[in-house]
Length: 428
Image (cartoon, rainbow, N blue to C red; front, side):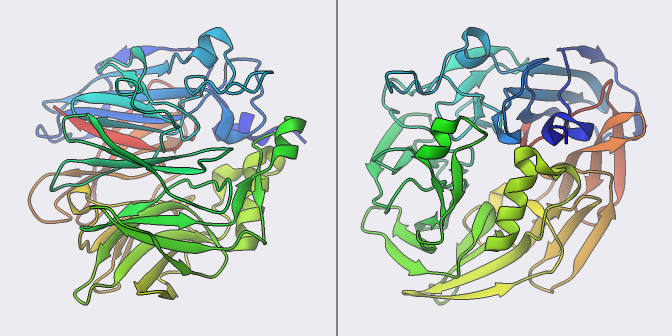
C-alpha cells in the first residue's frame, strides 16, 4: 500500500507559482476585498514526512479586490526545518522551537500574520507570503504555541497555550490586543497530553484534557507522530477564570476533540461547549487514516457535532447531529459569546447548523476545505463562506452566501490545491 497522505487529493505540489487576473464564474462582491490564506502540509518533492500532519507548511493565497481575483500564489513557510534541516529535538535532547513545519493555521493579530503549528513557535509572514521568521514575542514565549488561538472580540486579547513532551505539559498565554505577551502560567495536567484546541467564553478559558498522549517509545522508533490513545489517562474538561484562579475539572466520557465550534456561558451561568467529537473507536480509526493506512481525504470517520453543558463539576453530553463533519467555524465576532450558527464540512458538503431552531442546511461541494466566515453586515449570518474545493480541472475558491448557502462566485485557481487544514480571511 502506498502512503496515502502523498497521493490523490493529498498529494503535495512540487513548486511555488503565481498567476494573475484569475477567471471567475459568478460575480465577486466588490466589498469582498482582502486576502484568503490557507495553510496545509506540503513536503518537498521526494520527501516522506511519515504522517499527514508532519509535512512542511505551504500557504495558498488568493487576493480579491473590487470584484476581481487579482492573484493566486503558493509559498512554503521558510522555516529552519525546511531551509536548514533543523530538528525539533537534536541528538543531545535540546529543543529548538523554531524547527517546525508551520503547517496548520494562518491568522492575523495586531497587524502581524502568523503561520502556526502546535509543536513550536509561530512564523511571521508578509501579506505577499514572504517568510519573515520565527516569533517569540521579544523572548517572552518559551513554549510552543497552539495552532488554534482565540481572539476575544470585545477586548482584542489573543488567548492561547502551548503543550509539550515534558513538564510543564501545558502552559497558558495571553497576548494583548497590540501584540505583547502579557501573561504566561503553567496549567497542571497529569501528563503529556496532545491538546489541539481549547475554547474561551466571556469570563472563562476552557481546557480539553483528553486521552491522546505523547509516547516516548514511538518517538524513538521515528515512525509518524509519537502520540497514541491512552485508556488510562482519563477525559475531562476544565474551566478557569480569565482573570486568574484555579481550574475546575469535570470528567466526561472518553473521547477526543480536534476542533471546537464555540463556547459560551448561558443565562444560568453554565458553560456550553460545541465541538466535533471523536469516540475512542473513531479516533483510532481516523489516526490510522492520517498515518497513511487509508485515505483521510474522503472520510471524517464518525466525528460528529457534540455539546457539553457544564454545571459546577458535572457535564451533560449530547450529540447534535449524526453527520460525519469536521472543521467547525463561526462568525468570529461571536467567539466566546452566544452564537446561533455553526458551519462545518463533510467529504461532499458544506453544512450550516442553526443551533436555535435545529435546522440544517447543506450545499453540495467536492472535497470542501474549512468554510471561513467573512462578515458583511451586523446579522450573525450576514456574510460569505469561503472554501477551497476540488473540481475536475483542479481547485476553485468557492464563495457562498452564508445566509442561504447560495452560490456567489467560483474563482478558478491555476492549479490543484492539496487538501489542507485551516484558513483565514484578511480584510483590507
